[in-house]
Image (tube, rainbow, N blue to C red; front, side, top):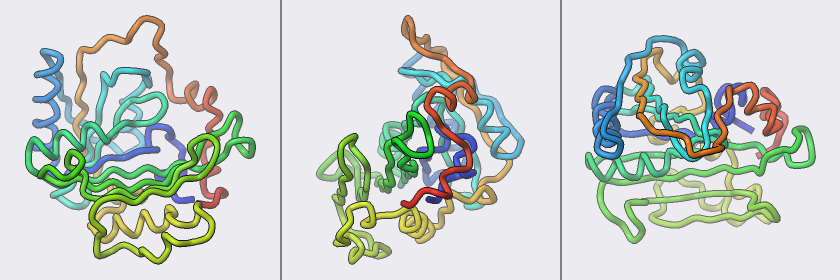
Length: 245
C-alpha cells in the first residue's frame, strides 16, 4: 500500500489536505480563521525537510488542534495541510471551510493500511479515500467528488458520490472484491491528474508555516509524543508497503 514516508510518521501523515492556494495565502487564511475562533493565533515560518517540519506538530492531541502545519509543494498554487491529531489528521473540516472562504479548490486524501489482527497490534482499520472540494455550494456543502474504500470495523465499504471526474477509472468500481474497487495506486493516479503527488516526499518543498492556536485540552485528554502514539496504536513504521490496498 502506498503511504507518505511508508508510515514512518503515521498517524500524522495518514490524512493530508491540499488547498489550491500559495503557501502565504493559505497560512494567512487559516490563521485568520483561527483568530476569529480563538482570539489569537501565531504563525512561524519553518525551513527544513518534510520529516523535521512534521515533527513540529508534536505532541499529538485529542479533541483540539493547537498546532497545524502548511507546507509548500512543487506546485506554487498548491499547499499541503497537516495537523497534530492523535488518531490522524482531520483536514476535511479545514479544507472544506477554507475552500468556501477563499473560493478555491481543495483535495483531501487518506491512505491507511488495514492491519487489524495481523502485522500491527492492536492494528488499524484500512481506508483509501479521495475527496475533492470546490469553491461553490453543491448538493452537500461544497463536496465535488468523493471516492472511498474503507473498513468500518466489521466489513469493507465502497462509496462514490458527486460528479465523476474525467480522470477516474470507473470500471474498477465494479470489481468483485470491495477492497479492489479503489486502491492507493488509483488514489495516487487521481491526484497526479490534478498535479499532486501526496505520497512522494520530493513533492514537498523544505518550507512551511506552523500555525499555533491558544486552545486548551479538555480535562483528561491525551497529549503524546509521536513515538508513544505509535506504540499505543500499534503502528509499525515501514509495514505499509507489505499491506495490499
